Length: 312
Image (cartoon, rainbow, N blue to C red; front, side, top):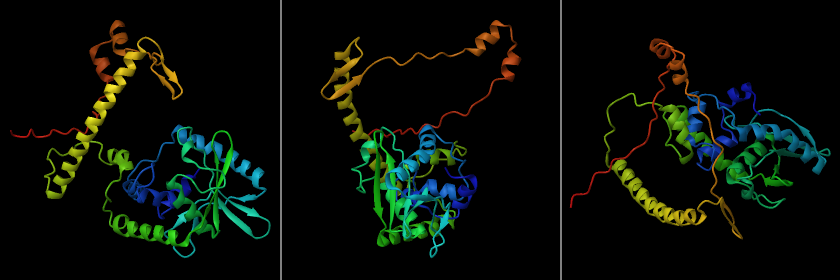
């Protein structure tokens, strides 16, 4: 897990996780997220359970890697590229084999939902957003490869990713262009599909009553959005018909099982809600006291489209 000092230091550099987001190949944010982080416009990321899981399992995976390979590990901290100061990385470790062989190491703990994305042990068949990270840590550590030991639930698999100078230069040029065009100018880049949460953080409320006037380019974008919505609508209707048949077949039972697997249609655990206002009134609390402890929360900001009806 990165320290607060490392997080602050990395704001001035592009890392392997950054370039994956800049290239829109990461599920953990896109170019707008990187831009917001570099300029300090986003709040510190609160670790979720998947992130905590990876943090706590990292040391065990590295120990497992040592037991499997016989390597000795060093923790180098954040390293800046010797030739390209914008590029930096924080390897989980550097593995030392004998007197002269070194490898960068990045431990991963895929969740049960992502383990199928990982290929055979000894291959480099890993989720694509980890490739730039593997290339960057190899570049800054000046090693010929990055080993990615991954706990895939039933075993440890080690995925070697060989350093590729041509690929590194592509990533490096994209990093420098992103920094010049967006970070230095403070102009936000076009958002990617994984930037939705970042957009909500940057623009949580509608503070201005005016509307954006759609020019030709924006109108074309909205037309494309409309076409995609209509396509999805038909697909969802077909799915809903099939789902209705399945639910009707299940009836009062708990689901369906067969050679395909299993479908569950069971009740979740009931939840309880305490009606504090009713308790306060039953205890004869005054309206003034209730009002004093009533907090006005900002409303949600739904994205709604009102299409014009076509004239017949």
